[in-house]
Figure (tube, rainbow, N blue to C red):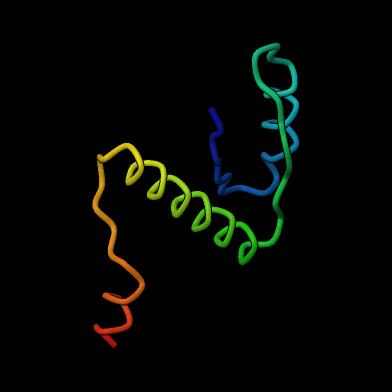
Length: 71
């Protein structure tokens, strides 16, 4: 499972990273420092999760044609 964490106080980031690295069951995959990139990654992850739920039949998504017709 992947988890995104937003640390509000920048001075606490090194402490948090050290704490996570000390856990044998957790790994830091990548640090994202740019807020714009962080938001884009989060939005993309949400989109992929929506597609996964759609494939499982748990969420209904619109077709591209429906979205275009709304414009």
